[in-house]
Image: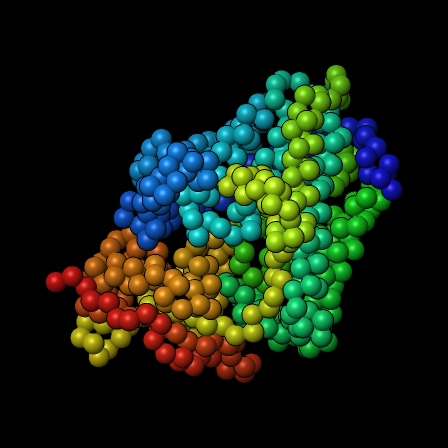
Length: 474
């Protein structure tokens, strides 16, 4: 089986073209989605200023902070610095999409920008697909072109890409089975998923109405695809083709029934590495077809071997590692070189929504609407992906915790009460366009999908106040 997996293919030049350009497209989408939100989230006057975070890190641990919090912002810790990193990322992505041959240097720059923004973004860029994009970009350095020429990428370089995809899928399925959440075993997980997921879309409501037997079957099928088809990847080309079909189907169904930004696009791009040039020749224009010249380069082989070895440390629980290996994990973690994956390991069974409300007199309270989260029960859940509204996502996590654990919520209330333009721009509708409200509060509600037959999409019940009322500046 390993021979079938490791045997060099006749050519993987088309695979490289599709894979690298696919990663470039994801970077372009991710950056263009993030850029307009950055200043309000981590800018100089943002909810969690990146400059303040770096200053705190420097005061705490000194020069070691440049390693623990790697970012280009150390050179320019301003809003202009954030804009510059985004501009570099967009420029590199466009160059790769245009077919510039210096793929390695451009991907390296993209990785540096991804790590820089991930560090500056703090909790806003701490999701598994953010670190997955960083790891995938770094891994792609081992199959990219570093100079003009059309030599095949080395076979071991593709093994690194397959290993990353295997860890994403296999351990995603394994996490569900070992998380202790009984709903994955008794088939009820999907009866909660569609209405409790962070950002439902219009199809989510209809998927929620499916019979229980179909819900159970879809949950079991998802785990089977993730676990069993991951193992099929080592069975040669036919096994990789089967895995490709199953993974793409699963990611497409997830994208169809929820808003997960560009995550599914990135996962599908990783799946592109499973196909050979003989597959891509069937769908790509003849002008893309070239013959390899020269032999694959193994200059980066030692670095690739080191990366593979470190990635093995992500398999056992962190607490089970010996002290020296724990230190290795701590040292590489800030750079998004290797990461742990386990999406949807536990299923949330209630939906707690934080709703921002303002008032001019303390009696009449009007809600602020967010681009992708339910506030108005009569409003259809929107389709916003591949855009990823970061505030909407983080509020989902905050709703499962307390105000004390999420002090940025009270900070956002204060900014709304002061009429902060960047903060207001994060919301879809501002009920106080003429003048900011005198008071702003956050209320917590339990939301569920409304029953069929009515005109409402949601039903909700009040839970209570989330954060205390904030007063605007006089």
